[in-house]
Image 1 (cartoon, rainbow, N blue to C red):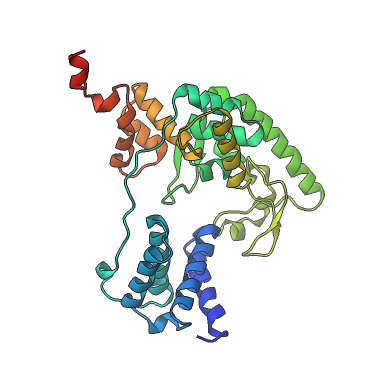
Image 2: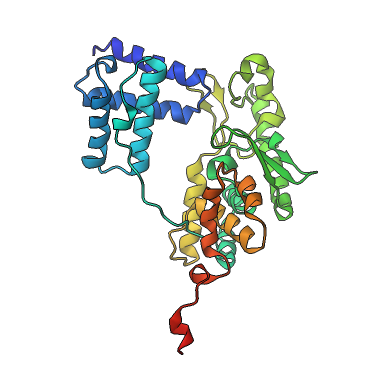
Length: 324
């Protein structure tokens, strides 16, 4: 494949991703995997390749690269997207392509005292993000991407827009978090006003909304609850905008708080969401309600949290305890 063809193919991938309103993160991921696939096949154009080449590439990722099952699946998704939506080609029997299966692991759940210990060691926006992950069941990406308009203080609700699977949902806004939320909104508003005074104040807008209402990018309601410390250039439009705080800011803060609290569990930001679900079930809420709050499509996904209900050892009493 020549140097002239490569950018043209990658540009077509970008266009196909944008037409379907996928995220910038997905776009960059797909482009990177397509580029890696082409290089793996000695710079041959993907149109000249087929299912056997795709399978060989994905298998090599697992064997030589020792990549995780989720990463291998991501690469396969990118290549299937390339053939289906960009090249418009049938690459054969998809069943012949080996899909990696990751191990089934139980979620890491913190006890209530451990959650308290972690939160007590956090400050500022990262602490508030952690509060929302535990108090509202948000994913990390959902928490940092919240906008002003997503908060309803009257109804005590948070609307999660375009969550996993591009589905909106509503979850609770904890009463105890309101003071810190209001303080964060005040900080974000002052920053937005400074941006406006300097001719900025633009937030990225979803999908084609910017074409329909270009002035909305400067409106307060569209600004992020957790604005980034500095502005960045939009990779799609080239315009300087203020994005949301990067996820790594919260991840580092949670990791440090877990270490300072002396917690030996392999707890991460997602453990706060796991703890939210588990503690609701412990408090007697039905699993369907928890499923809706979490945004799970299948209740079977939510069922995994039943392993740590008040009955230890899956509710079975060891015979050893009966002979003591």
